[in-house]
Image (tube, rainbow, N blue to C red; front, side):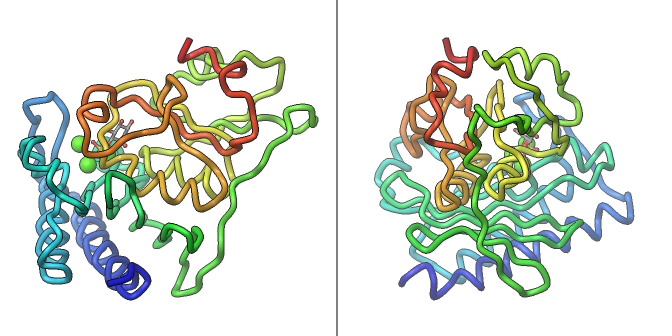
Length: 271
Ligand code: IPD
Ligand code: CA
Ligand code: CA
Ligand code: CA
């Protein structure tokens, strides 16, 4: 089955999970716990996980689902998978709890260790970003699709470098990562996936994430960024890998909007 034949169903599943998250968010009535990795999880994460896992299993019974909230599957088991759904039911649990509204639902399809489909749905703005390998990246608003492209910035221009940063990040710590004599403008937004999509649609030039980032955070973002003419790499400026030991042990990442730039000279973080 070609991804274009079921992309609308995947978007519908992400939307349904997002509406459930939004309903819970708006009531303010949810439970929260701290997981063994010391990160929070809420009843909204679990509700979205249940909707997506069940719906994907019905849509494609032969494709396994790996979700952040059910990632207890051995690498040996996963290595035999030619393809799998890679799901982050609620990206931005911290933003959800803090009440900023910057959270999303992420669904990616990984085939032969490369994401080939990516969907990121933001329930509070009702915006969906999606991409299919070879067919482009799009932003869907009220059923209307627009093709998105990242900005191919020329560092010699006068225009500032626009950096996507988290609400809770110290902007100076991000600016310090750049070896540039250039004015930087900050675009503040929560959630790894939404910041990546911001770069993909050219509203920011770069997002650097320092710290552990799961493969479910980057799967959809990677194909969306690439199909929008951008790229996404780890901090050693190497491509991200999926379903391999490397991606589990070296989970830092960076999104770059302009592949033509010499990021090894611009960025001090990886050196
Ligand atoms: C996290 C969020 C956060 C980012 C972390 C992620 P989660 O995902 O995207 O913005 O800084 O790296 O792990 O746990 O809320 O799904
Ligand atoms: Ca989490
Ligand atoms: Ca996440
Ligand atoms: Ca999550």
